[in-house]
Picture 1: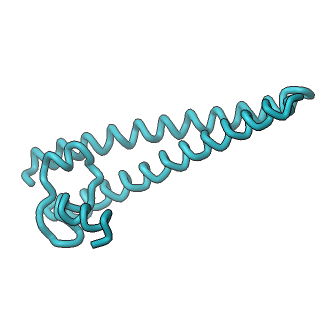
Picture 2 (picture 1 turned 180 degrees about the vertical axis):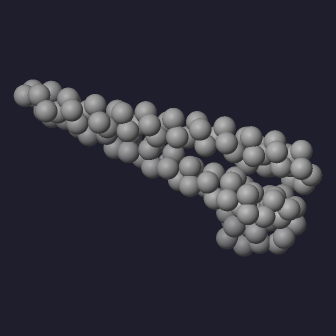
Picture 3 (picture 1 turned 30 degrees about the horizontal axis):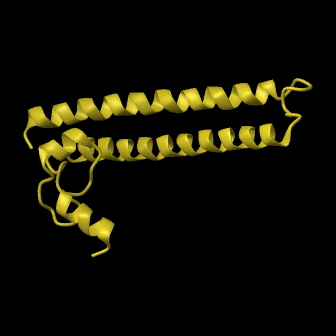
Amino acid sequence: MNAEQRKHIEKRLLEARSRATRELGQYDDSFTSSLQGADSDLAAYSFHMADQGTDAMEREKAFLFASKEGRLLYHIDEALRRLYRNPEQFGQCEHCGEDVSFERLDALPHARLCIRCKEKEETGA
């Protein structure tokens, strides 16, 4: 991978990091606002059991989405660390050492594995 391609991947990683951070901030705001809304007398509790179930399901979905964004942010940060620590080796597969294609990195800038090794990992071969 040449310097221009690395710069492009760095830009993509920083954009993805910014987007993930914004998303996590929105989840944080929604969690905080729902807790503050729960301070009022009737806002915290639904009268109907179905409403309570729906509220619980929505909170659970929000936590799951926030967890997913948190994992994505972790992978992006790890990719940026690899890029800044060892720019010449960035884009090499962690299993076989082959170059990860630029097209793959452009689509998924935090990829650690080449397509072949990722397929092996997913199939358990």
